Length: 290
Image 1 (cartoon, rainbow, N blue to C red):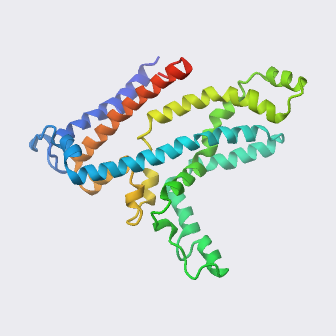
Image 2: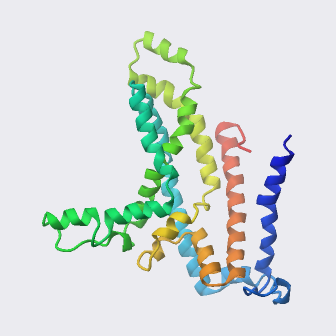
Image 3: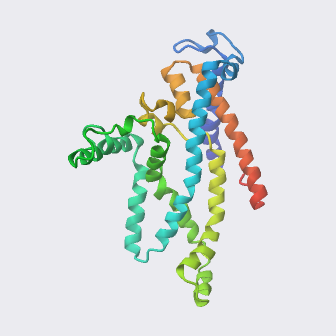
């Protein structure tokens, strides 16, 4: 019964690993792989010995880890949103709020950039129009082409897009909390705040820690779509994460072999982080996550 699933996993998750062989050749687009020079570990050595490559990898690692760390710190927001949502007694109003907050998850990052452009562009952006028309500024601020605070703005877009979707798991976890606990607390005179603190939050913490540990395991996998559409010449140094760096090296710089080597390094580090997260889970919760 599980054979189709295993076949899909093999085809889409393991067969692409064959592409790692490109990192051992000096591959040029349009040529047969095995007609190009075999360079062995040259591309891997370059990541640690070439000054230009080392500087760039350290820069993108700083961006990757910085924005991933901000994402982990704010990973508590979906749980808080789910708790606040559960406190709304009017069911229709609660469903409306949940739907409105979940919709942005289904919007592509290209459309998110279009919305951001309409809001923050220098000439026609809504915010700059308000500032100029009210005499607060003489000319518009180029928010989208600024590298200042770009980590926080990327975090803001990510929270706006994923908050409702991330809360769904916690909303499901809320239904598993025994209602008799609330009833017993209510009989003992506990208010809504005390019931939230002593029953709801402890009931959600196991789910929170599992998701937190998985986030640690995916510390380097923060994707590239968001950063690709928002990158420009002014903010590229601050916004280029590891996935986007691999794309730029391979598809823009045509250095496919080096890009593959960097991608392999990311995969190896991610696997090590996953085992580290699993180790932390065994220590803190006494349970393994895999």
